[in-house]
Length: 312
Length: 325
Image (cartoon, rainbow over all chains, first blue to last red; front, side, top):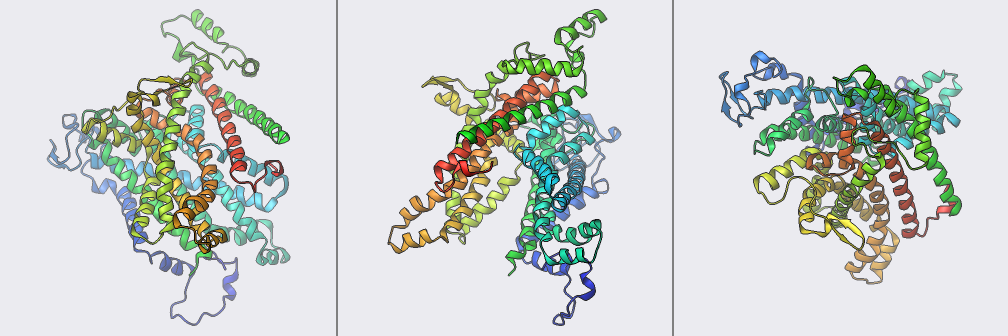
């Protein structure tokens, strides 16, 4: 019994449940399981809040930190809670260029999340495709692809990312390419493992006997059943991608100055840190930490909920 | 065993060759390092002379073969920036990095195993739950930010420890290290702790999982039935079996620590290979980047090999020769 996916077209002949008044869809059961833990619920709420703050940033914050007309250099490096020239209070202080830190952070969060999510989605698609194909085709293709995956996974992500950036150079697109390259192998390995297990099951055999096309078996029958582990890996990897991007940006080999993600904000604050101006690095770091932790905690709970072996 | 080592060596050679091709050709696609090296006031003739001196006027495959024939003789090219052989530049900085990674690993193990063991033996106590929650925080903490905060608190606010650089070194038993001087220890404490945090959570989780699994095994039940003291059961029977997976993973993670020391070294201005790599990437110092990568690949292969050997020593059930590696 799969947890999230339906067995292809199995919904036509779903056995009558009859017990509950509302039909128990997989999604509803999943949600019920997930929100059983108060801790995980809190993590979910935190994550949703962070995403909402990032999406709504232009509506919430007092200034557009990258519109020079709104930023006053005379206000630079003010400690948290100071009232600025423009009349509003800088609750978390200002950075070296006089930008309101709250505004800069939320704009930075947008960039960090966007880069993380986009790279994660591309890596998911590539990794899942490679994993499915490897499992389905088998033979030489499979062992070649999996050799590549093993080889890549035996090196630390940051090293591969650094080398790629040394080759590709800086830029948003380059960073995304590097993050995708670092991540795809995890998806490929997970998907292949699960797909191999699924392929030995009767419903795939049945689909073959019905003479369905390969593409249909792969994408309509096997893929939905591979989704649960894929979702778990994707959450964990999204957190990794965000952390890695921040690290690279901090090292000065990541995003360019025109796209100030949280990592760059922290890096900018580094030079003021030794003179005791902690807030420029501290608060963006807290936001980064909260984001990564919320994603990790949600991923942790999803792993438990989506794992049929842990079913109570 | 000999056949195993030979096969391993051949795989390594192929791996290094493939990597060198990818990086060498890849790195030549981007940018022309000559513009970073010559004075903009130089005239065309001098620039051409510099290009020729560095061998950059040759077709790329010729440059590659030149590089390979040099590499086979132990010459990985000259650093554009330092003017010294790239290998020398890297090897000079290697001890500092290894020292940092080693200290971090020891710290992670020394703190991680007892905590993980406790969490595994008493999974329901609130202390264990705190440890496990803490390990999630440890997973999530961005290394570079923690490094900054450590400097902030211990160097800037409290003024207890120096914030940057490596301390004085001393030579003891033929090993030169900053671990043998008080000044050196004071300098290494913060960066090593910063790097250790990365693996700390991993060691806790591994030990805990190992302990919980081992507790179900017959030999533990038997030891209990025999009336052994709990201390002996945990300290001898349990610990021995937990250490096998921990040693394997931790060994493999050593390479990871060396790679991640790039971040720590940058923050704490630690004069190691990681900082060198970042500088080389920023200044397009191709020979150093290529040489660095080759050394890292060799280091990884060596670590993996040592871990495999260690594994057979620790676990007599595993025989290397029988493995289709």
